Image 1 (tube, rainbow, N blue to C red):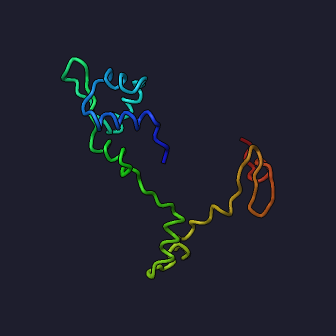
Image 2: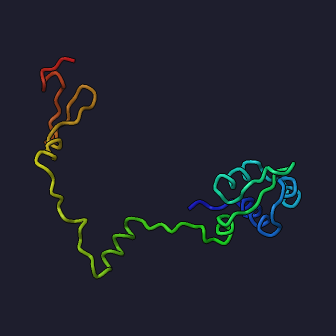
Length: 138
């Protein structure tokens, strides 16, 4: 998960502490705050913007409070971790190592050559020209 920019944390903390604020109030309290920071927070759902007043006000959302508290972080499990967890579990069946039952002819493509330029590279190591192997002169 990417690190949170310090200015983002400061803006969320300010809105959490002081409630709804205009951009000018935020800039006065924190110094320079790019428009992109506030816009990104709005797009991510961490703040809302109220255009009902002369100067739009920004407010922190529950999602923003969760982000500030650190509970908004996603827990991700890699495939390796999932596999390790499955192996440690008593119900592990080893399903990922069972040979798949493919339909007839589904593996025939592995016997065909790979084409690079005007040459064909066969799985057995042969290299032939396209015109020599197929009679096709395209």
